[in-house]
Amino acid sequence: MYLVAIRRLQFLLIGLALWLPAAAQDAAKQADDVLSAVVRVKAKILPNARSLQTLGPAREGSGVLISEDLVLTIGYLVIEAESVEVTNGDGKTVPATLAGYDHASGFGLLKLVLPLGGMPLVLGESTALGERDQVMIASFGGRERASLAYVVSRRQFSGGWEYLLDSAIFTYPPVMNWSGAALIDAKGELLGVGSLIVADAAQPGTQSPGNMFVPIDLLKPILADLVAHGRASGPVRPWLGMITEELRGRLFVTRVSPEGPADRAGVRDGDIVMSVGGDDVASLAEFYGKVWSRGAAGTEIALRILQGTQVRELKLRSIDRLEYFRARPSY
Image (tube, rainbow, N blue to C red):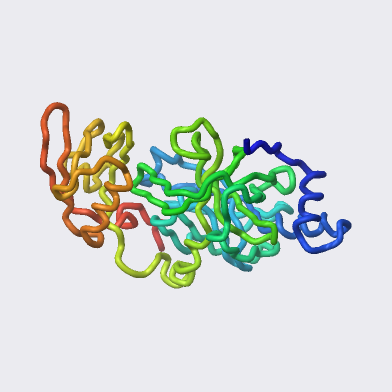
């Protein structure tokens, strides 16, 4: 059993004293230094945002200082934001702008308008993180929002919103303030950013609640591009604009993005995806693999779907997902 209680102030300090190479009397300062990098992110979303219905008009979570003026968070908190504010543990708040977004990983990168203070975290090595390794999860709120957890699995994660990670990090016990939370190792380095709470952290189909983190190693190859251009370089994956759920070997469409490629082609809620370009698909990973292998955004994707009792052959003109989002007006 991966049983561990959520540690509060006393245990956290003891744990950091053991983890970090310093005397026990320095543990409080080390804890404060590490946790000073974890900030609050609040975003007000554009009134005409495409994501308004699913993610809401106001979003709040955590972020992590990775340099003096850059905050890493989970992208769904800040996409289509009209304005963003970042607050540190001392209550200082400064505006921020969306510096970059990457749908493939899910990361969002913010640039602070003014320095906020705090010690940026070093990017660690998430590939070295294995099952049973102990980590710290830190949400905004200082020591009261920091807890120790275990990695219970490293495995592929398929999200119904056209999202796939090859080796996501799953932890137990679950924390409730997961959005943008920092996953920190024994050296005080950043290993991942919180994305979801899940019901099957240990393995698919089990009753084992926990959290899913996006590995920090996915950021390293694209960080310079995000800073310079706002997105990763190279071919852009085709996006169809459909939320799909995998159930007993079938792929059910649960939502179609209004005015997206699937909507324009006639895909409807409740449809079942049968094949891509003549190749049968029975899992989200198969579905995405077939779509993405057809070429970059803009390529035509042929789907066979079951719509009610009728099998239909549809052709969808894929797009770049960023083109679908609303951009903040610049005056």
